[in-house]
Length: 383
Image (tube, rainbow, N blue to C red; front, side, top):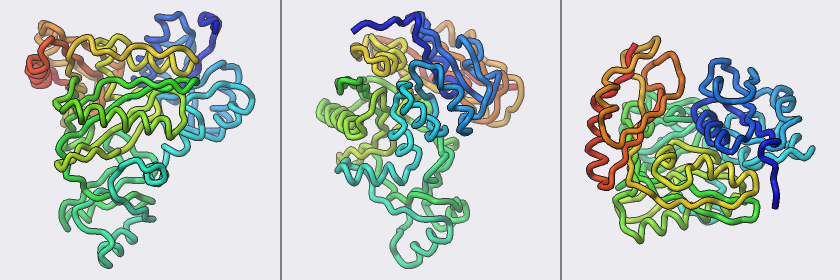
């Protein structure tokens, strides 16, 4: 197979930090990238050949953007899938496939898909809104504690409400939702797995995640994870089965629960580069971004071998600050051996906004964790 990378036009829908890092990987191959985003000052604004300002939920805007591209991919799922379907019919190579994006956009359809494909996930029911949730509690179909997730539009902890007691019912969302049993979690894990057009797959090592309890998003990630070889093998097999079940091209981030009884359950997935794979830029032979390019361009998948133990921390806006971002403690962190900084180009900070991430490398994972805790304590985004 031959491909003229320098004459290939890759369109990326979404101009956030994931798009920026995908752009940077594409530049290593002199691959021209074109981005569409509603924000002219988005993270991708300085790293793509051309930025189109536009709403990626608008059919005509997305269709017009994609017509002259050889390949289209995404860094966000909340997009107009019908436009992608039309472009796919006209010969544009759209990966992940629009049918996959459409299914994953809806957490209810995701849960039904896992049930149909016999992929282990927590028990659930689908309901229409707050009143139906309360009614099902009353008739005994739902038991506290449980988790409510909006079927569409949720991301980075938004669209998720945990009900631990009766008082938490006041915060119920009034929208079509998934109600899941509150899983007795031992650890939260993730596996990023890639699949190319030939159906070849390759998974990255399992990562272990810690979540910010206030923002409900990942703030500390370590690899290798502190699990047995048996659990690691089972997690990778589940992720591989999942991407094969979707029959998709690209990379799939599979978030998993390891229960206290030793079960591994699929939480949810993302058909694109993902927060749980940022560390691969420095820590693995092939980054998740290069791997995604390999998969969607129809090339051989790269090695996912871990070069160094690593910890990734999200750099979040401090709780009480909104305005032009300032980075406190940066110089102290830069003196830490193995510290690698990635800032996303967001000029304004606000509480819990993802402003960047840092990866800390060390031959000893415990030392990497110790350094990462220091960075987490020292590096603050204020205004």
